[in-house]
Length: 85
Image 1 (tube, rainbow, N blue to C red):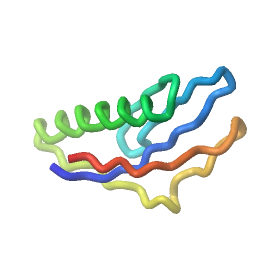
Image 2 (image 1 turned 135 degrees about the vertical axis):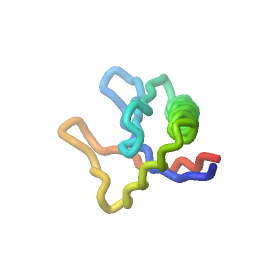
Image 3 (image 1 turned 45 degrees about the vertical axis):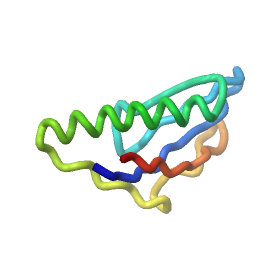
């Protein structure tokens, strides 16, 4: 199974990083560094995709980067493409 999904990551006022994969509800992570969040998000997304495949369901369609938000009232998001295999 190879899949690519965009993640959104932001730096919080308390110095933490939080991230999520909009196309994979439940794939969220937080940590003290962006690298830690990327690692955790990749792991969460793979586990979620494995569960979807095990149930025989189709993988969610990835969103186009143009449809993803740039940020919110708390600041801008960093968009990173997760390549999951």
